[in-house]
Amino acid sequence: MSYKVPFVDVPTQYRRLRKPIMDVIDQVLARGNLILREELREFESGFAEFVGSKYAVGVSSGYDALHLTLRALGIGPGDEVITVSHTCVATVSAIVHVGASPVFVDIGADFNMDMGQLDDAVTARTRAVLPVHLNGHACDMERLLDIAGKRRVLVVEDPAQALGARFDGRMLGTFGRAAAFSLYPFKMLGGFGDGGIVVTDDPEIARKVAVLRDYGQDRETGEILDFGFNARLDNLQAAILDVKLPYLPEWIARRRQIAEIYREGLRDVPFLTLPHFDDARYFDVYLNYSVLTARRDELVTHLKASGVEPLVPISLAKPIHLHEALGFKGVRLPRTEDAESRFVYLPINPELGDEQVRYVIECIRSFRG
Image (cartoon, rainbow, N blue to C red; front, top):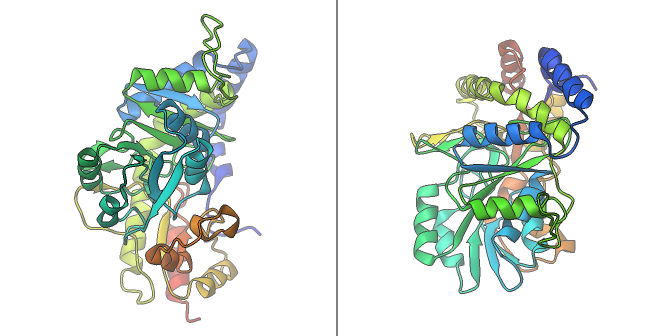
């Protein structure tokens, strides 16, 4: 179905950037620069500068960014890592695949980790806490760092949905020992395929991730230093991402404008809870505009019939701990489970025009169910 208001609009963005993208594709292919070449290094440098970290290491997905970071930190069997269940399974899979055990805490009203439960979740086996900055909104990093510092546990950030977001003036991705971003096509900065990137101020973590992404080998010496993986960020994708990177501040500003239009147009709708949290410490980038409503399924049907494409992402439609095959028996997270049946994302991609956003508002306000 062709929607009047699509959830994402890759074709429109591509048309706007077609010339510089095609120019860089031609340049990369003409040079034969396909694997771990200067375009990747240039993108890594620019990304690190944007985030405010010393190092950035491009990898093949957001999952690999998490997985290789945990391995580089030496987290493994016998360790526990605290995180949330209201997240993409990649967050939890990365913990499991290094041999560690995920420990879940519930979410708060902002869909992020409830810091009131974090301290009680720490045990003698806890090696790290992995906060997920969902929807482009930061976790309360002041409280998290205070708890992690007192309990002597590592902090590894998952800001896959929050590139460019800040907490108390500081960019997400710079609070922990390392952070793992996704460069999936529909993230804040997306390629034309999978991709991810690790940022850190620790040269040893950066070196280990760079080795692990490339079969565990040191390219300069030829020495095999570890049993690694094939998890490199494709050089062509890195070149395309480097073209897009300078536009990111503009795209963030547009997402914030759209969020304000939604806020003004929907603030008095009685059956909606909007994702606005009045705390000056938070600078949100709104990868998703996540609203809560008890009439979610009816509203989704109404919006689709009206030509609006909302989203209940399959990766979040059911909390991780409720998937029986994963074996998390006995875990109960009331607020996570409540959000499961009530949240829906409204279109907020930066290619939308004001008239499209206002049309979404009109459709919601006309909803009677």
